[in-house]
Length: 609
Ligand code: AGP
Image (cartoon, rainbow, N blue to C red; front, top):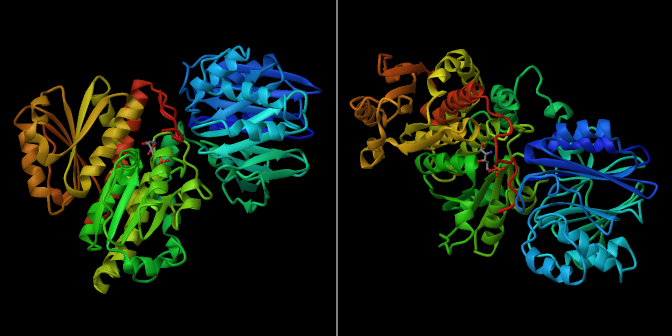
């Protein structure tokens, strides 16, 4: 949610910190701040609003120094305001940035106030700063004080602490919120996402749960929960430095929408044999596991959950294996029955979504055969904690609204369908047919994106609307849900999706001339059923927008606008039909003038529950 950057260097670090925050702003963006140490001088600048406001303040009030921490906030405790912005301080010498939620902050605050600490914010984070000051009274070093502090915290934290009285180091601690250490030459860094540090290094250490690390210019010492010094692997990142640039596009969302043919190509690359999928793609031992598996349980949130819903149709229809899909925040808090030989599949763009991660951790104790994650971020918690991982290779997705991450997740599921299916009776002929369809997918996506101009033309019709209804059937129902989510999250128009067969069980009452109804209608087995549902809407005066291929034979008239989508194998139609819905919500949001890449109240990576 929030973004963290820290640096210890010989050079001034303020620029590095602010550039890091810019790259993390997609994670949270209601306020931002930095604290920098220079010769025992602790300078703190915080601003309500975006990183640009902070950057401007720093041009007027420059700070200098080689040790610093910075933060961009997405409010959980305390309204967005300058006083609640991080870094938080105690005793004028400790400064702290934090990502996560300290669940026992109320009792800690009461105890700290009794000891004379005055709080200057409404955040849960501030307790960390005061606790460190308390612990420093007895500890031999800042490191020990932080180790003793984190033992008292309940909840989730990724935190970085600096001390004016000990300016050559920063102490970082991780539990439940990701932190990555960036290794430089004679300088070292930390961030909540490696993207923040790509301008300064390519070498990273991912901290594990419970790790506390002491970082100086020349050393990184990591300690586990027992306080033992440990060595963690160094990873060389090949992530694209330019990924955080918009290029010629007005918004990241538009850039990422248009990148889909390329991201799908990369996701497929080297993973398809002549007639089927290469199972090693999913990791060592995947083939054995897929042979044994008799049931798949999918857990995810938001858009990733919609990918899981499509996958259920595919796994049951093509791979001939039973599948359940559940929202991770529900799954994690209920007693569930585990079918024999079940595979737990988590899906996540970020790999850090708190509920999805908790669902995976819970599943480990429930007797699943194994776990697989479909994920876009290498080294993320879900990837590290799952038995198998399929990396989606979408590249960095910066827009809060998920686009290319979703379609590449679907590609991952399409490949999983083939991989499991071949152990469960999917014939060789069918494998060949589906593999060929997958190979032709990038071209189909390119053709679909050529419709952008005509979809932009539709957007005007939505700008003054307060509600919209999306309809689909079968594996297009989750696509209707995804279309509704996109429209509501970036244009703030209330949108709902229904399985079209459900219309007459309630939502039909909403239909009138003011209600736009968007229908995803490829020519498939359910088309005739869907056409009846469309007629139910038409008879009640609803304004229809139908996305369909030529074979579906819809015709535009006064009550219906038809947008013709290229023909595609019915299996992959959910992927192709996603694109026009993404474009529609984008162009509606443009007309409405909303903040497309950073819609209000949302954050890219939801690392708190
Ligand atoms: C959708 O556009 C959102 N970005 C959101 O629903 C997202 O899919 C959800 O928060 C899950 O995130 P994840 O894929 O990183 O786990």
